Image (cartoon, rainbow, N blue to C red):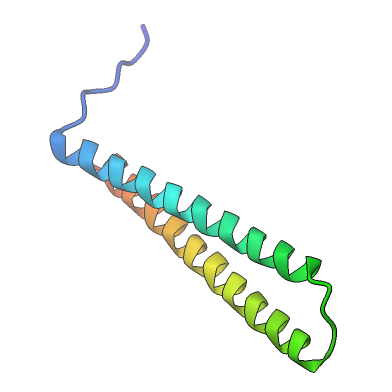
Length: 85
C-alpha cells in the first residue's frame, strides 16, 4: 500500500506558493548576476575608469548573488515549516 499525502490546507498551499515565488526570484537574481559579470567581462574598455566600473559591476553582481542565496534559504525554511506541520 502506498501512502497518499493528505491534501494541503489553504495556508500550506499559500506557503508553498510563496516558497516557489522565492525560488523564482532567486533564480532571476542569479541570472542577473551572470549577465552583469558577462557584460563587464566583454567590455572593450581599458584604463582606471574601466577597472573601477568593472569593480562596481562585480560588487553589484555579488549583491544579487547574496540576495539570491537568502531567498533560496527562506524558501527552504518555508518548506520545512510546511513539512513539520
